[in-house]
Length: 329
Image (cartoon, rainbow, N blue to C red; front, side):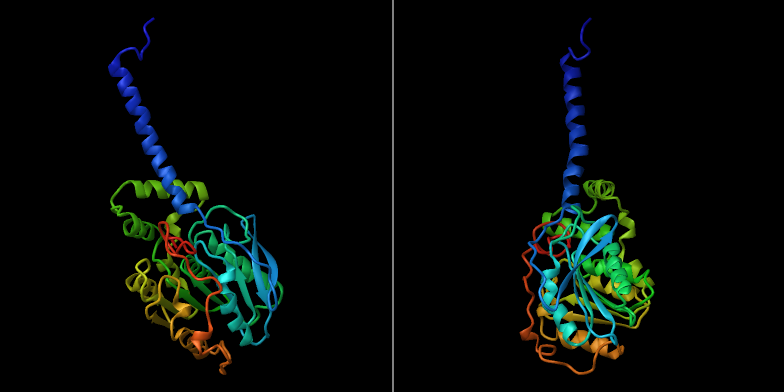
């Protein structure tokens, strides 16, 4: 019996179907890796005033550093951006700790010393922030409430956590994106020139949702901000093409207040903390709410004394901080 594939025309159609299927399935699958992949920074051992503690979120063990402070002020939970780790926020945390706050720095899933090999850019990371808050409550360190601070992906995570947690006293969100889908489209165009109408983008997002087990439509910082009842300080990095002022303002405008918006002059993505005026704005905001000590100690006002432990690395991929924060967030 003659093979069905004997004629050249049928063989050509079969090859076309095979190659077409590989393109339709393979390209979104490969592109999804840029959405869920993480960049893991090396870790260091905790030293005074820090103690390493373990958290649990979604079946993953997370690494965190804890510095216990006084009982009169809210604890501070800090969340980093994509491709970063808690080490970058050590000195920032120590500034809060010197002023009497308990501080918890969290390695979000798939970063630093935490388990996991995928990111959802603020989706499941919300649960990592909430795990940190639970750990503080269990230790009796969150009685005065909690201040949540996040940068880029971390900003989206803390906004989404603040929308569902009752004891948040203030939120400091630097360079949040508006929605997951819009941020992916923006970064794909910014770094790769991919037009937003290309079917590859929704296909890649769909594969990322399947691989990482999340709903992209729920990762919405604008919607989260509208539900946050704690006061908000939204920070724009003044020289950031990835989360420019127009994007951060959408998050800010959605918040019911009280709220402030500060544009960090000349700051690159995730770089507000090294901009002049950072501590003046942050501490002034918290003092106005009565959740920070009024006096300022050495290093609080002098921004030149504060530097990130590890500076941000230039952007690489498609949505957030830089190779320390990748080009994704």
